[in-house]
Image (cartoon, rainbow, N blue to C red):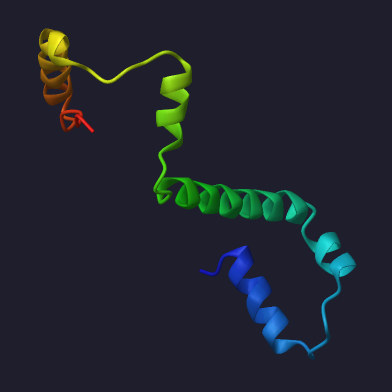
Length: 98
């Protein structure tokens, strides 16, 4: 049993070749623009995630410093231990001190 997509593909392969135009493709599939926007949006999002993930400067470090956060010092040993225990309990690696 062939699906609609497969039968369309087979009929296109059997028909004489002609260069498809954007108008003909849009007439055959009215949701083509939406599909293309989703694909392009996903590609751009993936590229941006990879770009920021691989960046040596961590952008969230600057955000934390602007929010008033500071690295834990020797007086914050109890808070550090609590944070490590919470992370381990949740299945995450403990936070690094750097």
